[in-house]
View 1 (cartoon, helix red, strand yellow):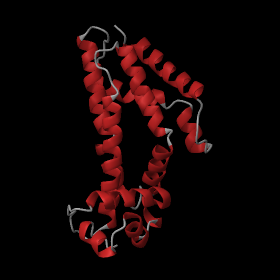
View 2 (cartoon, helix red, strand yellow):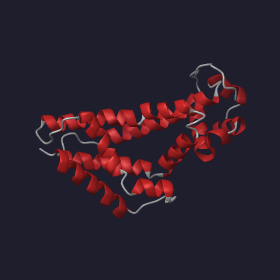
View 3 (cartoon, one colour):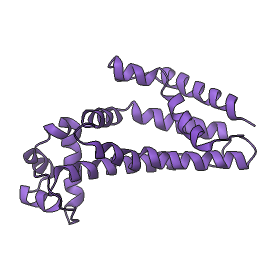
Length: 205
């Protein structure tokens, strides 16, 4: 597929192409995904595929954006803003840990890291579609906790960045450096509960 400057064209089989491409990209990565395989998985001709996405990078970024949008929507929908802030944080922690330890989350991470040098715009697109959206919701949630008198935070943006990092303790290094692909419920709950306890010890009113 050429790396031209053409834009994305919507059409009747647009979603069909994205779903087929998602399957192939997650299985084979960006470089390993061939146009023939994507067209076959999408049940469209190569001409149809090119008509929608003249550039494989555009297709890859659109697939990534679709995955991130779905995950962010699911995470945000799980939050009950009327719950005590500690319970809200626990829900956020479960969603965050659940995604980055999932097979989908691990595949996305490996692809983004693997293509970072050749495809830097992928990382930016991934951040803007996923983590940035969740971060904005996290800030909104923390500001709600402050308004309700549950939290005292000087730098809300920093606090919104800190909590996800606390949720990565132990699990993320093991996943990246030791190649561990799954964790028990006890292991993930230990990390999430510790993250909530540490965060509340610092910021609880």
